[in-house]
Image (cartoon, rainbow, N blue to C red; front, side, top):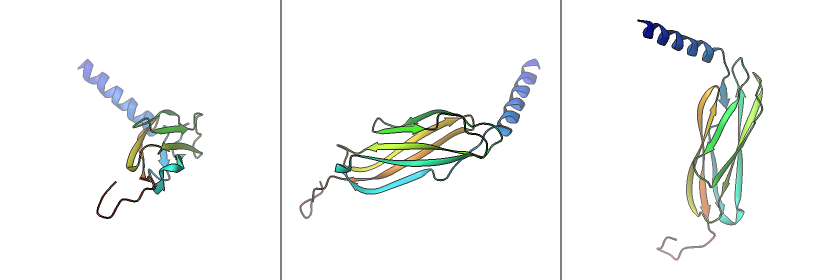
Length: 132
């Protein structure tokens, strides 16, 4: 019985603190770079977000799915109603072909997965009837 009461109290506190806490809303969660030349090297996009909650929003961890993508993000707490940004830079050098990468954003408002995608062209034309 004591264990049940502790579990219920813990769950109730988690719900109350989450409801009264920070909230995060991204303008977009997928960015398509389209097709671009490998010689362009690195390409960058910005995912803008707003704190929709009533408490400061803190991005605790922002992690890319692979080493070819480098994230940067707003490191200071974002006040309610204010905005911040997560930048994602993809290094296309030596990586021709389609790509689809994720950036996981962990904050005091939960977890959000962002996606970048596109196609890197190496600038070479394949002979007719062949693929490179």
